[in-house]
Image (tube, rainbow, N blue to C red; front, side):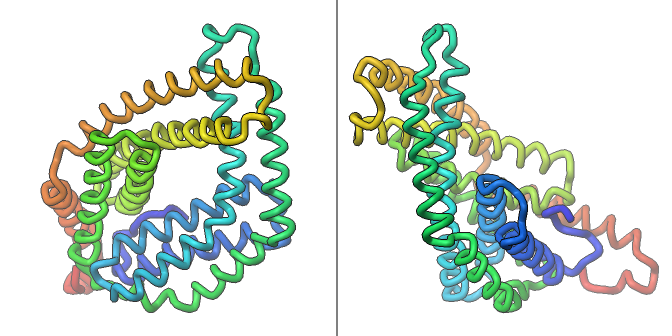
Length: 316
């Protein structure tokens, strides 16, 4: 079932349905009987937890701040051990992407010794997190308990304000993170921009039925922005690892050319991301939210016209 609203359902039930679906999907992935590769489980389970945090941000103005903070911390902390595995895997993928897009510069060089060291690091992280710490079981227990609390933070009114304010706040935070990154292109500020863009992307996916063509386009643009920043972040982490533990990653003659390639690629990625950000955040938060409110009204009105006459008096 898609991670999006349904016109025929009251907002409270719709939000609760989407939340329960993500919780159930995560539990299914984390179960011992799941036959999928560990890295795939990590990726998909983290995605479920990110979507849950995006929903939390969407309904934040409607629930108690104490409830929001408690649930957000729960899902954040649950994802952390899985993130360790994801990050170790992402370093290998970042190296492979870099080698692929730099073929003309590096010729036959493959940085094989560095890649082997990254593979050894991934194996060690998997053993520690998935085997020794039993992360799948631990995270599964957290998610299972979270199912019992869903009603506490999904009882939202059936009107635009119930989610519109949260969407506006998410857009505002993402736009602010972009502006900070323009002034300070440190790895930390770029990573914060990426996180906020991800939350916004998932919220736009939820709202896509309001205006499928427009919101799919917006969600895709937010996703592209996040992917550029994600690639930049992975390269930044790879660079830091090469500098912090040089003896682990081969000879100086192999590391130095790679560091230069990382710096050039990061510069290219950041320039493209900045251009995308300037276009995406050209509207202020209120104007952005008003536009989506218009989509909401048209969507609800169209849904009401399609209902049987005896149901049209129900609140919209």
